[in-house]
Image (cartoon, rainbow, N blue to C red; front, side, top):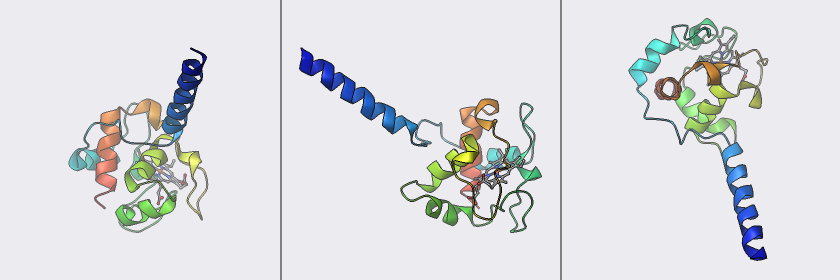
Length: 127
Ligand code: HEC
């Protein structure tokens, strides 16, 4: 009996640790063309990504997304490109790109739907 309690506790601990890692695994399948449109529009009171990011290599307030499909996987060791971009959108202060400040709007996790986040990730990883 006591062993089961300990095992259940350990299981909860493991699950807790696993879910605290940024993961895009629970998102629906994203659509890059919808993501391209979302990139340029304000959603649910949140500013459009294009007010701070470009896709052509030029820098605004945040880094350009040109080539992000290759750089994203190299940012945090152990985090896939998809999970990194997911974390960047939903929890920007978790990692601040070198040379930039922690200025990204930080309410996208609340303002965007999981589908919209998935669409944006699909778009960014096509760049
Ligand atoms: C108010 C300005 C601002 C807005 C709006 C903004 N960002 Fe950012 N973003 C930044 C800044 C500044 C950084 C660099 C600092 C950091 O890593 O948090 C950044 C970093 C990122 C990165 C990491 C890029 C890399 O090269 O590693 C991703 C991905 C990203 N933003 C996605 C988005 C998406 C998607 C949106 C729209 C849903 C968005 N951002 C809206 C300012 C912004």
